[in-house]
Each structure stands twice: as C-alpha cells, then as structure tokens.
Image 1 (cartoon, helix red, strand yellow):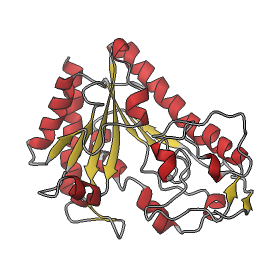
Image 2 (cartoon, helix red, strand yellow):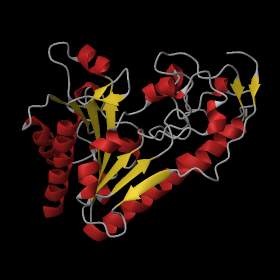
Image 3 (cartoon, helix red, strand yellow):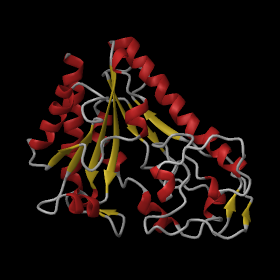
Image 4 (spheres, one colour):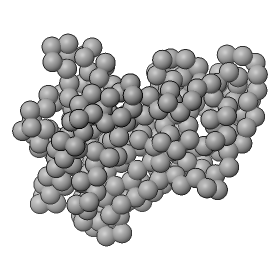
Length: 293
C-alpha cells in the first residue's frame, strides 16, 4: 500500500445508522439482527476509495433485509444496519483493526490480528470481493475510531438494549443474526448439490440444539439443503451475544445468494418472491415456537 495519507472526515449528521421494527412492545423472544445489508455509502468514504458502489456492494449481504419483510410485518422484532459493510463491519470485534492500514496507529494500542485482519476483512475492510485494496493510501486511525464510535457502537448498544428488554419480558432471548453467503463458497464446500442454508450455532454451544433443529426443519420442509456450522459456525455477534447461563441465545442464518438473486448484477431473480415468503415464514414459525416455550 502506498505511503499516501488519506485524511478525510465523514459528516455523520445526516446518516441514520440503523432502522428498527416492532421493538416498542416486543411480542416474541426473538430478535432479528441484519448487520450486512446496508446500502448507504457516506460520500466522503466514496471519494476516498478506489471503486464505485457497484463493486463495493459485492461485499454486502444482498437483499437479506428484503427477504425478511414478511417476518417484520408479522411483528418479529428487527434491527437493520443502513450503512454499508465496507465502511464498518458490525460482525467483527472492535479490536479487529489491521495496524498496517493506518499511518498513525498508536504503538501502545492492543492488536487483535486474527484471520479476518490477515485477509483484509476486519472491522474496517481493506479489500473488496476481488481481494483488491479499497484504498490507495493509508488511513487516519482517528477517523477509523470515529467510524466505530458513530456507527459500530451505536448499533451494538441498541442491540444490547433490545436483548435486555427481551430477557426481562420473556426470561430468555434468541438473537437470529441474518446473513447471506456467496454461491461460489457453497459450491466449493459441497460440490454435489451445494448448500442453500447454513445455521451456525458454534457447534451447539450458542443455543439449545432443539432450537436450531426446529429452525432447520422449517427449511427442510421446503426442500432446502441445510448444513449446520458449515461453512460458517458463527462470527462476532453469534459468539459475543451468547450467554447461555442467562438464557441469552444466538444463531447465525446464512442464505445462498443464488437462491434469490443475480449476484453479478445485484438484482433479485425470478425466485425472489417465493424464497422471501419461505424465509419469512420460517422465521415466523420459529418466533411462534420460541414464544410457546
């Protein structure tokens, strides 16, 4: 990466970090988190990256929020990130910053240089889906910290508030963290027929197995190929919001994008309506099941 310094500052005054639905009076012990479907690009960010929105959007979980519209309309509590994942990735630890991206990274600051940072997909992304550098220079660490405080912290604080509200009302809470996965990954993992749905439960550690089994059955009944913990067992949200001793549970949902979208052209395919209806109904059935417990 070049020695050029990128000293831009984002105006956050008109950026709405998230939308939430059905959270005033929570009707179900289930909260949907949709952290990677945001399509808002801060203009100052766009002016300082090497690619346009069309390329950057290939990193997002395409239309996952739209797939859940039916569940939202039925009253399932939901929080949805509005800002693009390439700006801040909510499903990473706050410490997953790559020091090499910054010209002024503090020497005394702790480093969590894990696998996400190594490949360029930490809490601040370094690369796009083609593994090309997003920036042609080094970022200002203080600008990155402002992203985290103005976006990352805001979303997670609200999600924590909602989980506590749910726990107080029902005595337990399930966070369903909703994502999509590239079809190419699914085909590599299982070249026989691919994977339609992946449910990540940290290898049965993030929630009772019967909860995960019930949700999986909703997709099996519609002939979806379901895998558990393959290729994803759960990331930051699944791990960090999971507190079984408090009856705080998590589950990560991953949907194969080719089921419902043209991944290259970033548009719904002719199956979108059918898949959206089935996914939303699966979530509604899950919410009703949890409420009966």
